[in-house]
Length: 95
Length: 485
Image 1 (cartoon, rainbow over the protein chains, first blue to last red):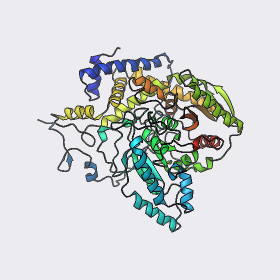
Image 2 (image 1 turned 30 degrees about the vertical axis):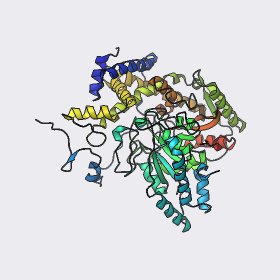
Image 3 (image 1 turned 120 degrees about the vertical axis):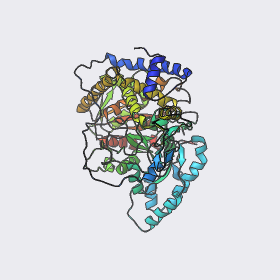
Image 4 (image 1 turned 90 degrees about the vertical axis):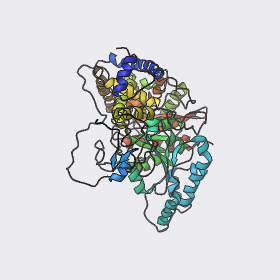
């Protein structure tokens, strides 16, 4: 499928980003040329090939469910731009 | 030679022989920073508070005859995507310009335990996305060998700091070449360890299946010393590999007799600078004179490396960077009407152009209807690329290629066309796709600009690539040359 402004609007919404009209056009053109290059992969015969998620074989790592000290509340909240009553603060979500 | 021109192991020897004090060494570096930093801009944050009293403490320990590690009292630099407790960690982004981590990355903890002295946090392409450090939200870093050129990226600040004598060693991160390419462009030794060798706990994520922390140093011996401190299992990183602790110093021997070198033809195609091809072949000849043998061979899927890398990296990036919501940490846009507004405005204002481009590309390739066509297909090609290498390593001990297709380029030379910039990583991305270790060392100069040679090894066989690199270094003088500023 070709990429147009509508595609950009759809993807931007999924990624929670917004662009002005000038940037949208730029990004249409750039993504088109990038994806054209990426389309090279379509010539590869991949029937029966298993996907690799990681260069090194990894497996799920379990640990015992033991309570351990973690970061304290103050140091966590230190980086929040808005906080109230020792909590993160956001605009009202329930009317 | 000035103190700042020396290597970490040379400084260690002088400290141990009491020929110089740790305070003198640290002051020398801080003076050097005051003098050259206005031209180079390696650092985002300089950590001069308390560094001299820390140096005095180490002098006391030395005086008391304490048994100290190799890197004790050695001034170092850290890429600004590695978390440091209480010290700004910006990732080169407006998004994190005020972010002060409440904890240390595991590698930082290990270096602090070693008593290395943190001099500063280095400039980088925003969220490690770039090959020139021009994508930093704050400033470009200049190449110490030629101030009109880029230092490479994304660990450009780390490379420039070591090459300019503003630190004796630095850590960087390498997702597609971000340690090796700047090492090549700045005439340094840059190691990307095997995936899982160095804990990623406290490294700000870009593409988790490709990211790896590694070293930027003036020579191979320093590389071994830093690896000795940072490598090893960490329960806080589930992809960290358990195993016995290795002593990389054991790899510092001159011995390549009978070593089988593979030269993959696909890494010497027409876009690679002809002088770089020549310098790499001359480098191979140095090793053959010492008893190694080489053979040209093929890694047939190489032409798909960059596309595979880009799809996987941007997909993982779009998922990893979803955490920046403007709420818990990071930039928050003002005057937002509702929660969705907080997300959209904070992300759109906080991220730079390249980061947004990769999030968009990644979101596209993961989205409904395109997942199989792009992401899943890339993962399957990844298998084929990985198998290519595995097959090669049945026959060869190491593979040797150029690190970068060109020497350091001028500012703005590649910023207009994103694809042109991506192609700077053409020789390095395959190694991350396969999770292999690789080192870049200096093998010559073109018009006074350093050329990098890349040695690729088997999984967990850092020792062999270090031994080959060390042997090369002992028989050449390129690593002794310093940029004049």
